[in-house]
Amino acid sequence: MSVHHNSGTTGGVVDEGKHMNRTAAIVGAGIGGLATAVGLRRIGWEVTVLERWPKINPEGTALGMRPDAQAALAQLGLREELLRRTVPYRQAVIRTPQGERIADLPLERIERRGGAPVLMLSRISLMNMLVDALGDTAIKTGTKITDPEALRGQYDLVVGADGLRSTVREAYFGATVRPRYSGIVAWRGVARFNPPSYGETWGAGQVLGITPQEPGSTNWYAAVATPEGHRETLDELRARFAGWHDPIPRLLAEADEEAVLRHEIYDLSPRLKSFIVGNVALVGDAAHAMTPSLGQGACQALLDAAALTTCLDTAGDVRSALRAYDAQRRRPAQRVVAMSRQMTRLAGHHWEGPRNSLMRLLPA
Image (cartoon, rainbow, N blue to C red; front, side, top):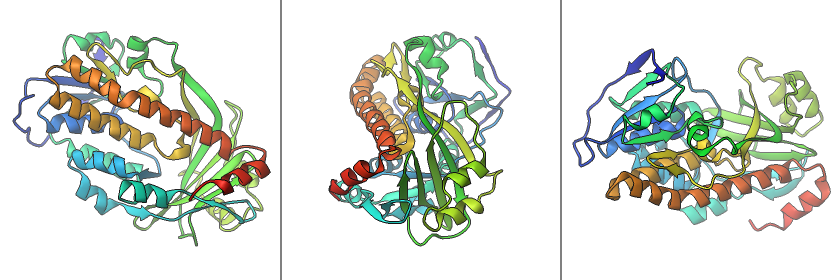
């Protein structure tokens, strides 16, 4: 088999169950891969997570867990841990660079419809929760998959959770579906002070947001229209937002360059016609990478994991389960991809006046 691994980690106790003899290889130890491993482990599958990096070293700032993603984590047995690590996000405003209100972010509507507020935590906390929950599930780090086909004969199920540039996706679904640059670079960091309010500020071709992250911590992010491959410095970012309302200049002035994250943002195009082939399934960014404008990437990966677990637990065989998973998740996830890209374009539009007038007409 064309895989190479350096290490593995185990611990915990396997629950007896009807799937005890079923085996799964999960390629990628991000949120989608780890959550899928937790779910399958809980229903009795033997799971091996194959991660190409030498160790799992989570990074990232705040994630917003919507009510459906909270339900997915509850299905994985992580509800209490989630509540312990999070803070509710209930009110936030979209403003102009001068500080004038444009509209409210739809947090109250999300809570009203979902029955729970959005809960904020760091990506590091979520990753650590999932790793801790795996028990003695094997995580083989430093494992580079060069031939995914070699896995199919050894495991009942292969899950591609290997992100935007998925090796599994290319091997089984072809190279026509590829990363598409959004035109946006995202900057992320953690503030050292509590702001007077939360929300987003929309300018011409750029957005800056401030949210809670977890108890005692504040997250900020900036999305700026940038040519692909252009390397902008933090000082140049500060210059972009000079003159914007408080506390934005202070927040960027105090940002630690070593701790700030910068990523070019991509989604997938064209959309996949299926998330499955044979006994192979895709989850998370490998299936539906999206821009972060709706804050839904992690939520959708968790929904994938929960749905795949449920389908495998209730269907009579793996292929029937995967067909049910595809029917349940593909179209909803792809709708979120499309809506997220539309929001990226709207928020970063250079025609501020018409855009802001449109946002003021939207229902609360």
